[in-house]
Amino acid sequence: MCTKWPGRARHEPDHDRRRGPAGNGAPGDVAFLASELMFFGPLLLGWTYGRISMPDGFAWASRQTDLWLGTLNTAILLSSSAAMALAVQLSALQLKRQVGRCLLACAALGVAFFLLIKFYEWHREWAEHLFPGPDFAGPAHTGAQYFFVVYFSATFLHAIHLTIGIGVTLAMWRRVHKAMGPLPQPALHAAGLYWHFVDVVWVALFPMLYLVERTP
Amino acid sequence: MSEHNAARIVQDVAKVWLALLGLLALTVGTALLPLGIWNTLLNALIALLKVVLIGLCYMELLRHDALPRLMAVVALFFFWSSCWGRRSASISLAASAPRHGRRLRNGHHCRKAALMPPRHPITVCLRQAKPYAKETNAGPSWQTPCRLAPPCPRSAPAPRAR
Picture (tube, helix red, strand yellow):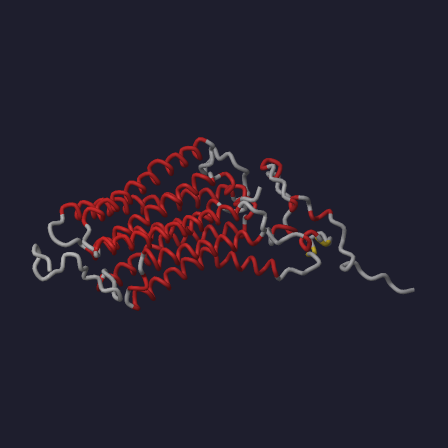
């Protein structure tokens, strides 16, 4: 038994393997994430419409995106997701220092993904006049502009979600860092669910935006 | 005991992480191969695999009660169907195209559609080569105008018997 907090085993987590650490908060978390998917629904529908009705323009436009930067972004986001999963699962063992480190690594990878790579990518596309508008450098009336409307909307919306996720992760790190008692497992689990949701959205967006007819 | 558990957790998470990175490499690798319609299907399948891995191993959806699990599955179903559902509809449309090509608006018969994989099921014959095809310099075979293809012998009317 733990001496600091009576009635609670220090290294024996109250983690029911069957019900999970989230307890009764889980349905609310999942319902929230399911409603969050609706943000991306119209964009995805717009993409499928364009892909079917304007395939030539979409293929041309997709080839203008940077495949390797997109792949690097995906790898970084998958790694951050692994760090978050590690933090959530280690929190069941009340390993405060390790959980804090994993949360920091997750936020740092998110910042690297978003701030460095994504901004650089947007900057390059802006410089190449690929942003939809009167200065658009691509072919007119083929759907290429439409693709970039979807591309910038989807990546911007994803970036907003990622920024929120970074904020939530840092808040969780602060909470873990200052925690005097047991780690806040349900809150950590909810933060983890949100981060993985952002990851899942990017996993779906990546082939849609970067891998359309890449065959040389 | 907790160190042993922690090591096991790290090992499990690392395995899934490596699997996800491997699937990512596979997606990018197959996207560069000329597989025609299989590129799209493989991308969708691999992305679905990645989502299932994340859902089961990282989000631990199996450890939840039935209600959140059901909600997650329904949400993912709608998400995925909006992503790929209409795409697969276009694939099935192409698959149901006649084997010996399509009749064009000008009365000619496009034989190319029968010879090549249906990468552009709707545009192959009904649309003409776009002006920007020269700009992209991609030069896929479908850009050769189908309308100039000779009429399919099978579609030509049989000579009258004298």
